[in-house]
Image (cartoon, rainbow, N blue to C red; front, side, top):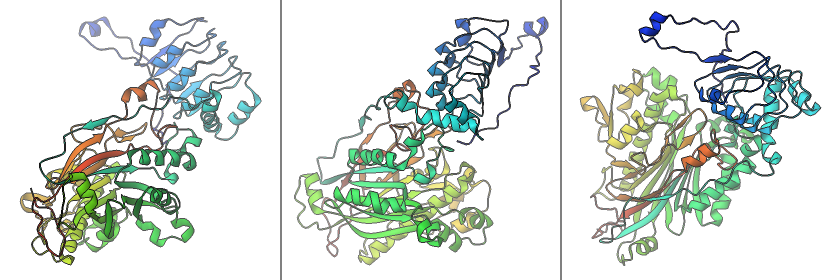
Length: 559
């Protein structure tokens, strides 16, 4: 876990005393540190209400125990308990995850609670002068001893209490949004979007609050597959799927459940050796073969598009082309049997119905909001090209060039919040060329190359597209899809075509009370295998009332 710069308290403890005149004038006092000294034997319970404290100096007293209520001081980054008579520490000390420095020197500690391993931000741990077991002191005295000892304590926490440290999270609730339209023919299907956290990214450096055994892929993959199987979605879009795991785990497991799939790794794989290539992650789409068959499969490489369409833009070459994120798309044919089963109506004469499923993973760095926005425009441009080529190849001249000719489901880890330019662009159909997410960099000339709406109109200073998209999760229904110690927010999405699709219901968020009650600092967690929560939605595809036949293929009438 990257640590913020930590400055220890000034040992001089400089202070000024407010004058009576300053107090009379309403000047506010501020003190973030507190020192208690004088051979104190016990602490007042009033101390635990001082939750604003960032440093607490309790050294050189006669304390024999520390109450569990000390954990209420959740803003402490410095705690000095040195030179007391402390024999044991409360397990609750492990919940003080803001601590950077914990000094326990010269006490009477014989054991340490395994919960101390949860202090993943701790940089200094003082243990000298305690009669601790040799095993503990040997670890502590090694190079990088604090980190090694904390890892040992965290990894052994579950075994020490004979079970995984928290109860299983409750099932996520189903949120119904509307009933199916019974007045016309429809086809119902479900979609899952899930970033599974690739093994090479699941490190203690990034997720120091999670035991190493719970970060291990062999442990996590079982829970990931349980999550996927539990949703039983008709269409599954996954991000951060390792190449080797796609072919050796995901595809074989899901084929047994009636799925087929399509996968592409990030662009870097093309320049790697076979042994290195298998560890590159990418995007995958799975679909139930009893309900869909694949007509076309496509891979979109953003760095290749950036290079081909830079138009002299240094930002395009230096910022976008250097990122190897990708997207994938599968053009599906909806099986007639599935449509009849969903609608309860005979669809005689309606032989084929198309559905385009797209899945992407955009660049992660918050400092590159421009790159994410450009990548999204590139992806939608390529999706538009897929639609155009599909309608032409099927010789459907009546709908050729129509952006919304084929229903679209777009799943993605956009690494962008709901108020970002990326989401504005997708959900409203356009974004200003001067949007702050472009960071005043020169992109406008190259962006006109991405044909999403006729000539990709830039009139009135806006870049637009013709897709009519809506998010399945709106109005804060999901407070976060990514949940780590440093960041909690919505960055994963399921978008769908408004002209053809309705969302009937979604899988709601994990109970926030469970996260609080079990002191879950972030995910992954022994019970939550990824740092992302899955999205799951049931959609309704409205079929044409009177299906026009063109080469035996039917595209939905616009609404």
